[in-house]
Length: 194
Ligand SMILES: [Zn+2]
Ligand SMILES: [Zn+2]
Image 1: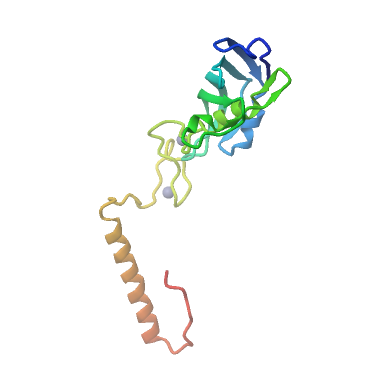
Image 2: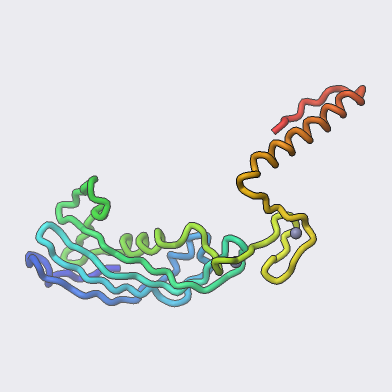
């Protein structure tokens, strides 16, 4: 996405409003994004601060995401708030996390492609869920627990008791193996015990 900023050059304090629609298909490279539904709406203000350009505003995309629990598609709006400084000298201030963008100025055109795309992609949630209480699918039989109950024994273990349950399981399988060893004349097999 290229923006002509000729009116800002050499004019500290000058600003420019940018309203654009750009293709959103780049977001589909992200595995949780099944489909971009429409263009990316870019609303930015670019200010010449004297030391560089401050880019603020928001970037929005309607998308079809995949729920990480039930794996079904759902519609969501991805929104990125932008507040980035592009320095004229291209230097990156390590102390300031907001300035990690290189200024890509070609004549009087500023290339904001990377900034727009990456700002949006980092705002895709790590855990996409169709709804907060999505029960997901049964890890044993794969049933969609939102629409059907299954017969599998509950795997819900109190988190505080989980180490105990694990311990019980280990000691059970160990005693089973011991029984096998005692009763068997077959060659010993070297199985991993984890
Ligand atoms: Zn879900
Ligand atoms: Zn099940």
